Amino acid sequence: MSAWTLKFDSGSLFDFLHLRRPATASAARPVSVRPAVSREVSQRRAEAMRGFFPKLASWYEQRMYLAEMRDVDRYLSRSSDLVDLERRIRDVERRGSASRCF
Image 1 (cartoon, rainbow, N blue to C red):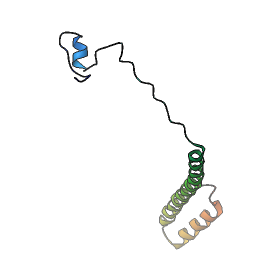
Image 2: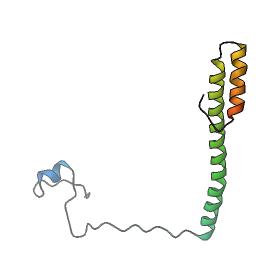
Image 3: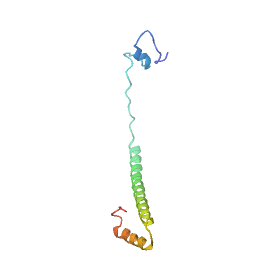
Image 4: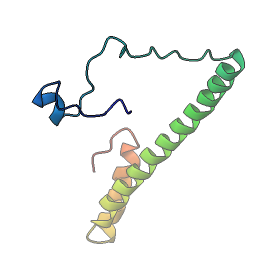
């Protein structure tokens, strides 16, 4: 017989509607014990994390660079003529990457 069997003669309507287990003294939950992690597994995990973070930083840096280049491209594409384009190019070169307000 399953532990989830409904008994209509005992328990409340709330227990019946929510399919609760009848409370018994032997229904204590087992304590989960994490297995001990070996030193070798810990070292491999640490190496993997050290390898991951430089890649993450590189990826983030590349994304920021591409976003900045999109902003510069958008700013330059709004020029009305050749003189305005040259002025905007000088403006971008003068500002550098410190100021991204275009």
